[in-house]
Amino acid sequence: MGDRDHVVVYDGSDGQHQGMQMECTRCGESYTPALPVPVSVWLGMAKAFTKDHAGCRERGEVTP
Image 1 (cartoon, helix red, strand yellow):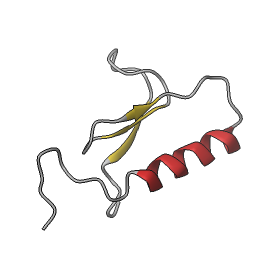
Image 2 (cartoon, rainbow, N blue to C red):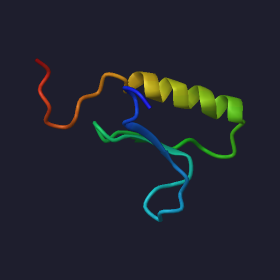
Image 3 (cartoon, rainbow, N blue to C red):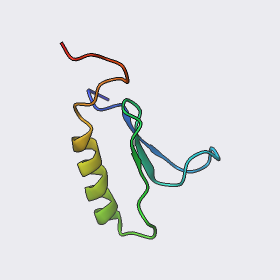
């Protein structure tokens, strides 16, 4: 999956996350868009969220 596999989307079936919730598992930030939303709009939000978190480090990780 590459260098951005730390950005995930939940389907809401686990009972802990809302459907279509995006989360960066490195910094812990998440975003849940208001639904319904056109797929093209959601995809744009997902791409932007992924780009914003491309450089995130694990919590507590120090950049050399």
